[in-house]
Image (tube, rainbow, N blue to C red):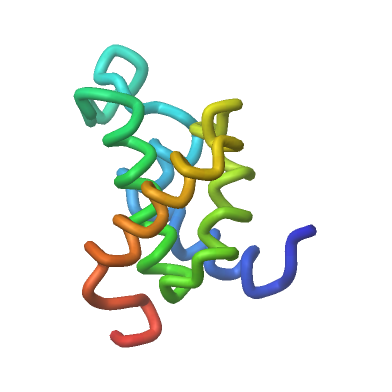
Length: 101
C-alpha cells in the first residue's frame, strides 16, 4: 500500500537520475543511457537502499517496502539474511537524510 508521503517523496527522489535509473532496474551501463555502471547487482541494490535511506529517513521497514516496489526487486531479496545485510549497511553508510537538509 502506498501512502501520500511515499508518493510525494518518490516524486522528489525521481529527480535524481541515479535514483530513477536504479528504481526502474537499470544498473548495467548497456541498459542505461546515463552510463551508470555498477559492477554487480548487489552494489546496485546497496546504492538504491542508500538512496531510500536518505529519502525515507533510514527506516528499515520503509526501505524494505519501497525496495520491493523497485525494478531491482527479485527473489533473492526475500532471503532474510541478504535483505538485512543490505539494508543495515545502507543505513550505516547514510550519514544524512532528506529531512536533515
